[in-house]
Structures are given as structure tokens and as C-alpha cells.
Image 1 (cartoon, rainbow, N blue to C red):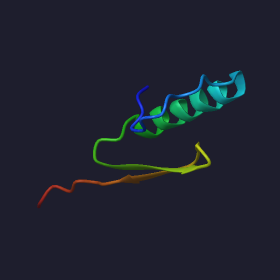
Image 2 (cartoon, helix red, strand yellow):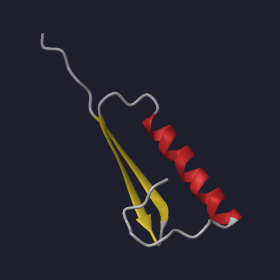
Image 3 (tube, rainbow, N blue to C red):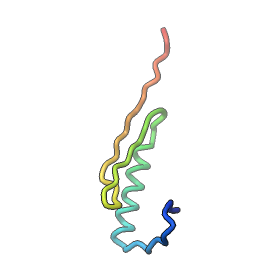
Amino acid sequence: MTSNHPEQQQPLSPEAARILEESIISVREALTGLKYGNVSLTVHEGRVVQIDVTEKKRLKPN
């Protein structure tokens, strides 16, 4: 994983690594089957606390 910050990242504790992996799994689940739409993450104190999925349905003209 890369960072946009120039400071060096510290290694994750086992608990932080577990929480990050759970967040990644949740994001993957949100993306599964999504053809058109948005996935938005809310992060608080470095942790994903909310995932919003907005799906767009394409309608065929009659």
C-alpha cells in the first residue's frame, strides 16, 4: 500500500492489520456486482467507519 504522505509509515499492530483486512473485505463486498454507481468510504482516526454504496440503474428507452 502506498501513502501520499512523505513521512515513513510505521508497521501495523496485529489488531490494526486485522481491522484493515476487515475493511478491505467490506469494500470488496460493496463493489461486488456493482455495474454503475459510487462507493464512498468514511474514515475516522485512520479507520473505515462507514461505507456508502449508491447504485445507478440504467433504463432502456421504450
